[in-house]
Image (cartoon, rainbow, N blue to C red):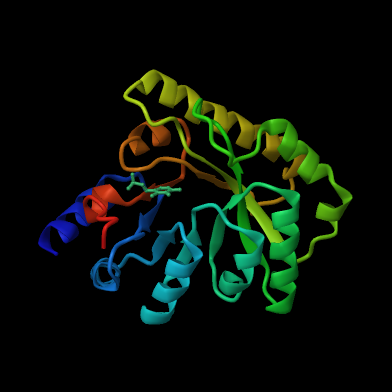
Length: 225
Ligand SMILES: *Cc1c(COP(=O)(O)O)cnc(C)c1O
């Protein structure tokens, strides 16, 4: 626990004021979350719906829970009543489901569009053209229970810092483009969620204002547990 609190304080004090820290607590026990909560942290991130809802039930209700991992439409209903921000919207159909569940819960659900910026082949994330299509769609225009608050992305897992910086710069460009063309009248569109334990300094240098840190706070994850 001591190193946990040291890690947290060191990181918290090193971040510029405009950067929001999401403590990524996936695989970590509720006690570890509580320890950081007791230091004043309120924003936590999980990548799995089941773990997110389990921790929501166990832990203080003023925690702001962020869903940062891939989200399947059939699981939206479990988090819709309480989730603070969904970072991983990558299709119109997922957004439709979130909108429907928002209506059922009588709450507007905040979302980020996830972009595929890495050279690695993953299934998840939009490209710029796909985002333009989504945001131009009449069905999107009619959604009353979702709010798009910005963008999220993950860089390639590599030691090549130039490549990583380039990928983050690309996401910042996408953000600026969407802001100008689709959200120029919306103060809500203001989040660039990029940067994890190994690359958050590079991400901040490229314009990130929300970093998602797990290992650098909690230590290595033990997936065997
Ligand atoms: C696990 C995870 C993180 C945190 O990763 P660390 O390297 O432990 O900081 C951030 N974002 C997403 C989407 C994750 O799944």
